[in-house]
Length: 113
DNA sequence: GCTTTGACGTATG
DNA sequence: TCATACGCCAAAG
Image (cartoon, rainbow, N blue to C red; front, side, top):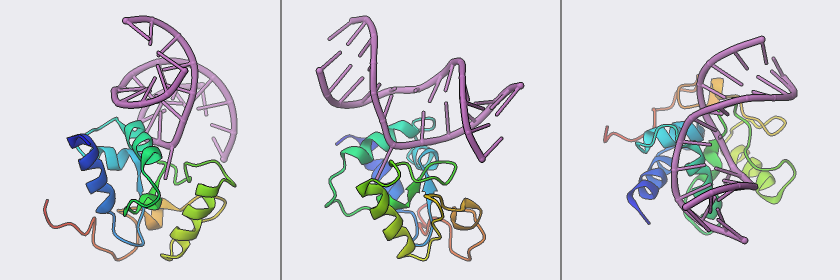
């Protein structure tokens, strides 16, 4: 695993519970602006057993990236709702659950920057 | 090596 | 909100 992967994993792991982030935001956070696809590809390769909140990563539109109705899609919806994140038609309102949304959570929850 | 593909993003109409 | 176009780049063939 290279440094880019490690930073992407770190960025994803830094998303607070009950919050979601976009692929682009993760890439930027990992120091790889414009490499949103790299984040998606990496998650596609990530084994299910990986201890990572992959389900908190959505498209910039708030849409779940995986095919509607697929196994991953339903699993992601389930995990999100388990954290009180609202999922309607495969989509999450970023205005409320995004990192800079209305909820009174601390941003990123990571004090190291 | 070249082409295709893809858990994406932004701009534009 | 939907569609189209273009940028991006690592893997797979």
